[in-house]
Length: 475
Image (cartoon, rainbow, N blue to C red; front, side, top):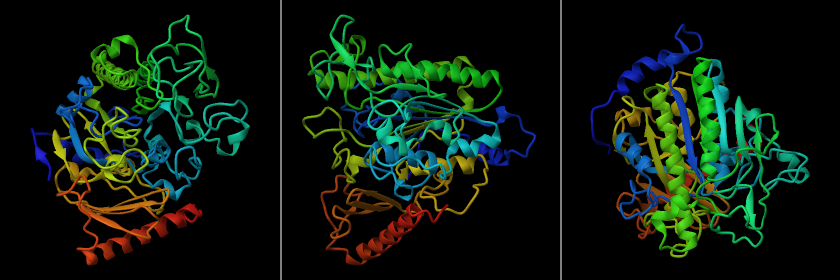
């Protein structure tokens, strides 16, 4: 059930925007700009707008949540990063195209992405930050797989419809991203001074022409990324094109490092906690900078911003600072704490200012944009996401399309309030009523065999469909 906070005008947009397509005489400015922001390993309970007990200072994200749509059951399509990222761009579960886990596979050229769908509408598309959907060089040893060792997984933003990019293959330190101490702790370290002995971290930034970027890479990594986003927005404005931007921050993925200004709120905490919290505060500052820039350029009301995390928090509960907000499980788990993440949508005067607890997922982003912009999807391949416009408009409060998950040996299947989960490829099953039991403490599998059997059968049909896709049957 959605809880109304204030009047809104989404219905107006839904009446007008479906008539905008490449065949109309509408100007490019009639279409909204679209920004997808994703952070890396942020937990469901890390933000104060989801967990009032959190001490992490994120005033700009809190403001977005208070002004826009806050999803209380927003899911990443996977409990690790690469698969989730692919789901955002394709609307499909990653097991359909071979990205089963982090650093596994790559985004195939046959997949249809958001920027490819937006190109006929004259959108300018840019990707900034972490990529993690393929390697970025076939020759130089780089990041997790770059160079000769991962040449078969070479897959860049330019190969998937983007017009501009500034990217790393995978993780970097969240401050001074090119440097690490000689004896680096995997969790992170205090910021390095210019005189501190250090070494090259091993992950490079690449521009759209796949030239290594070496300038303006010092300091907070979120700022380093945003320094490239804002000129892209200005270029779009000058060229009178609507823009689509994916901003995939590295924070708060390990190793976490934060500058003194962003850790001053947390000075009495351990180095790990201080840097984890500080890099999130630094990222939040850059989100505020982005919104201020949009406002100053007169683009605020014409821009959709969709914020989420790629999976739950890293580390063991009690030992790592990230919070799953009391949910069971963390990163790499298909229990709620591994995949239920913050999800915030802001579109001034258009997106409703409500809380939505209907389950939604990163795979819903592409179908929602296709619906909003009245785009003809070019074929009949299965999409795992749905348009959430009827949910936003409160036409429906119950999702009519279940959400499936696969990761390693784990399987999960969500039908609104009910969820089944298997840790062992379907050899055994658990079942939970998430409306009554969000912490997944009360296994209903034995008490509701009929419901369990039905849901297991549906999940197995979906798994079979994903397997057929993975064997190339959609192409």
